[in-house]
Image (cartoon, rainbow, N blue to C red):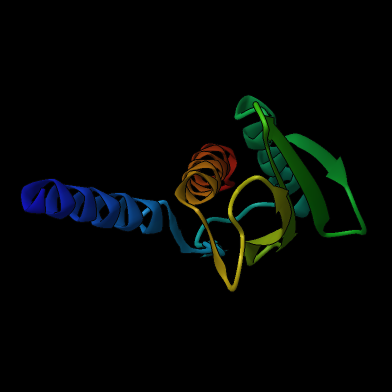
Length: 129
């Protein structure tokens, strides 16, 4: 009986620890551009990169693009502010991503990091020399 109790307690601890590892601090990439891109090139790079990754990208105010991602039962909303010197990807809201107290499911950070990398690649290839 004692070994069964210890095993059960051990399993509960492992499950609790693995649940904690699913969230991490919300990633807010801020990229300073070292390339020379026009605002239109930056806007196009953001929209194209987002669409390639499955984000629905829409223009907001000048210098602002809103993104929405539906990934099965998970949803994420971001706002990307940009100008000729850089851009920032900000978390706006989500559904089923365990967002609470500045933490979010690690998948969100993976999605945003991939988007940031794709934007940088597009900007590097469209930069004027």
